[in-house]
Length: 325
Ligand SMILES: NC(=O)c1ccc[n+]([C@@H]2O[C@H](COP(=O)([O-])OP(=O)(O)OC[C@H]3O[C@@H](n4cnc5c(N)ncnc54)[C@H](O)[C@@H]3O)[C@@H](O)[C@H]2O)c1
Image (cartoon, rainbow, N blue to C red; front, side, top):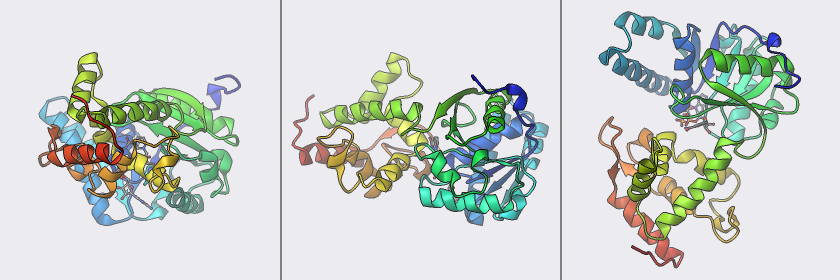
């Protein structure tokens, strides 16, 4: 990166993660697997237990496939300290926040971290869309605030968007760029903008696939075509894997859920279908066991859903769109 010397990178010996959901769990696995111990915080003990059970299950599935030894599995588990208390973050070198996509909640988390973390500690956010510079304002160390945007599943996907805001300092940028290499990711440095790079592209793709289903196709037809085209997974399956609530929360914060006619296309936003999926039916995806598809207990195999089909047909009707075969 021009103007950024890798020599400025700081050694990271211990990492903190806030939120043990879809992303927090996957993110922390990266660090443990390269020998860096992690402290992970949730707002409630039951959420913490739930998140830890998923991490355990993920590694256990590697043990069953003989890709991980039982001894290494035990070592990994012993390197995670689950907590509900911020005071446990006093000696970490970097914290990655992965709580709900909401500015107010993120600012509160960063205020809490700023109060307990040592001054040199880097405070990173995994936000998908929010202004990292705005989050930084809730701390006394905006120069140490940066975005580290992982992609789901965070322990598998190679891309890491490191997001600098105008005040992020050289040491912080160099550190997260070097860290990407250590955890075997491709670190791409980007600036703050709506959706950064990955989600900005994904957003446009989502608009198109939603239009296609409103015009007559089913999610499984779209996914199957994209799979045959060579994608690892179709766009509706990706939605269920990542969580359909992420985009919903963002649109809700921008007032676009109540006013879909202000959508990115000017005329109407096809995202109202996703928003109804989340708001009316709580179909968030794999994490609620139902999204664009139904799922059997703990299984990832997508099963076409009658409820979703009805929702889509009703949505087309609502917008006066004639469905084609
Ligand atoms: N899911 C994805 O594909 C994806 C990809 C990249 C970035 N992100 C971003 O990562 C962040 C987390 O997303 P997710 O998909 O993991 O969401 P999630 O709903 O699966 O997990 C969020 C977790 O944060 C916890 N939490 C909420 N408020 C908290 C608080 N105040 N203190 C501590 N814990 C709290 C929740 O209990 C939950 O377990 C969001 O900002 C999202 O936009 C998500």
